[in-house]
Amino acid sequence: MHINVLDQFRSGDSPIHRLDPRVKLVGALAFILAAALTPDGAWLAFAALFVLWLALVLMSDVPPGLLLRRGLVALPFAAAAVTVLFTLPGNALVTIQMPFFGWQLTISDAGLVRFVTILLKSGVSVLMATLLAATTTFPDLLRAMRGIGIPKVLVGTIAFMYRYIFVLADEVLTMLRAREARSAVGPGGQKAGGTVFWRARIVGGMVGSLFVRSLARSERVYQAMASRGYAGELRWLGKPHSQPMDIVWLVVMLVVLLLIQLWARLAV
Amino acid sequence: MLYSILRSPVAAPEQLHIPDGFLSAPVAILAWIVTIAFIVVAVRRASREFDERLVPLMGVLAAFIFAAQAFNFPVAGGTSGHFLGGALAAILLGPWPALLVMAAVIGLQGLIFQDGGLLAMGANIFVMGIVTVWTGYFVYQGLQRFNRYAAGFVAGWLSVVLAAVVTAFMLALSGTSSLGVVLTAMAGVHMLIGVGEGLITAGALALVKAALPGMFGEQVTGRKSDATTVLAGGVVLALVVGIVAVFFASPSPDGLERVAEDKGFIEAAQAAPFEIIPDYVFPGVSNEALAGVIAVVLGTLLLFAVGYGIARTLRRRNQRLVEAPVTLE
Image (tube, rainbow over all chains, first blue to last red; front, side, top):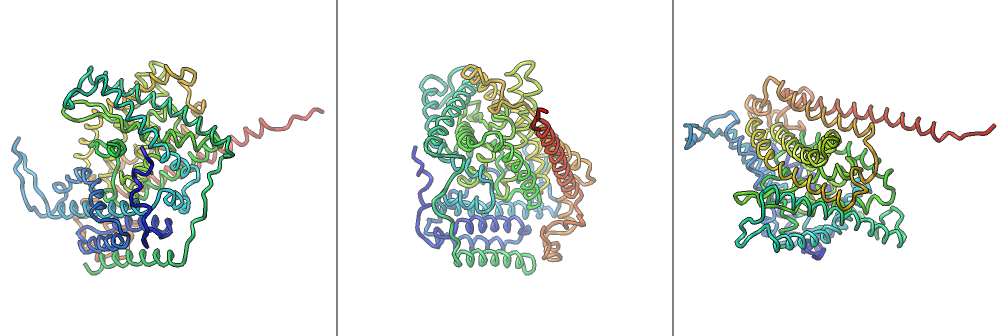
C-alpha cells in the first residue's frame, strides 16, 4: 500500500494550499468552535458558515462534490441525537403512533429545532475538517501541530504512526486473506468456522501476533535510525514561514467568524 | 479495498468517536482541559522512561492499534465485532505510554479521516484513551492473580462499557440526547460489543505469552504501577463518579433542556449576545447540572495537580537521598 493513497489533492497549488499550515489549522479550529457556539435555530448563521466554507473550497480547486461525499462520515452518529426530537419540551408538532404497546411519540418544535441544529453544526464542522485534510500535506499538518504547541513526542509519534499505518495495513490484509482462505468467511460472505467465541479468539491471536511483529519492527526501525545518527530529535527541513499575507488571512477569517456570531445573536 | 481497510472502523455502528457538533462547547472544552493535563504528564513520564527510543516505539505501536482496529469478525445478523484496543495497550504498555498511543491514534483519525471531530477530540481522547486505558489497566492488575486471561477479558469488556457510559453522559450534558435513552442504548449495545473486545484482548494476551514469554506480565517498561499512576486512576474515577453523581443529584436531570425551555432559544440569544456560551450563563450558572460538573472537573484537576506536585517532590527527595555522595572520612 502506498503512502499516497490518501494524498490525492493535498499537494495541489492554490491560495489555500499555499497558506501557512498553522493558519489553516487555527482557522479550521476557530470555524468549528464558532459552529459549536452558534445558537439553536440560527439558520442564517449556518448558511453563512456554509458559504464561507464554499468560498474557501472554490479557491482551493478541490472538487466540492468529493468533500461533500466525505463529509457524510459523521451522519450515522446523528442517531444519538434523535432522542431530542421527542424529549425536549415544546409545542407538539407531530404525534407518531408506535405500532406496539400503544406508545406515542410526540415531536416538539423545540426538539426539531435542536435536532436540525445539531445536524447542521456537525455538517459544517466535518466539511471544514475535510477541507483542511484535503488541502494540507501531512508534513505540513505535523508542522502546524508543532506550531500550536503540541508536544514534540506526540507529533513525532503521529508522524511515525502515519508512516507505518500503511505497512501494518498490508500485514493486516495478508492476515485477513490467510484467515479467509482457511475458514472464517464462507462463499457469499456467510460466516464459517466455529462459534463466535472461537472466531473472536482467532482475531485475538491475529491482534497478538500483529503486536509482536510491531514491537520487533519498532526495535529494527529504532536501530536503523540510531545507526544513521538519530539521537531522539526529529528534524524537519525548512521552517514554517509566516508571511504577512498569512496573518491577513487569519485575521480576516477570525473577523468573519466573529461577525457571523454577532449577527446570529443580534439580528437573526 | 485498501481504503476500506483503513476506514473500516468508521463504518462500525458501535464506534465511540464523537463528531463535532454533538458536544456543546463547554463540555468539549472541559474535556480538552482534562485530556491536556493527562497528556502533559504522560509525555513527561514517557520521555523519561524511553529516551530516544520513545518516538519509534510509540509510533509503530500506534500504527499497530490503528491497524488492529481494522480486524473484525462476523458475529450475527450481518454485524461484526470490532476492537478498540485501549485495554490491551494499557496491559501491554502500561497506562501512560498507552495513553500516548491512543491519543496519537485518535488524533490521526480525527485529522485525516474525519473520524471523530477536532473540537470533540479532547472528549474522544478522554473516553477512548483515558477511561479505557485506566479501567483496563487496573482491572487487569487487580484480577490477574486469579487468571490472566479472565482478567484480560474483564478488562477489555469493562473498558468498553465504561467508555460508552461516559460518552452517554457527555452527550446528555451537551443537550444532544436525553440521558435515559442514550445511556440505555449505549450501555446496552456496548455490553455486547465489549464481549468481542474482551475476547480479543484475552486472545491477544495468550499469543503474546506464547511468543514473548519473557515480557509477559510485565509492561514494555517493566515498571510496576507507581503513585502517580494510581493517583491518575483515582482522578479518572473521581471524574466519572463525580459527573454521574452530580447528574443524578441535580434537581433537574435534563437540566439543559429545561433551561432551554424556560428561556427560549432565540430570546436567550438576543438577551445575551456577548455571552460566550449561548444557552446558559457561565458564572451565575442557571443550569445546575453543568455548573456541578464544571466544579467537579476543576476541583478534581486541582487535586490532581496538588497530588502530582507532592509525588514529584517526594520522589526528588528520595532520589537525592539515593544519589547523595558517599564520602569516606
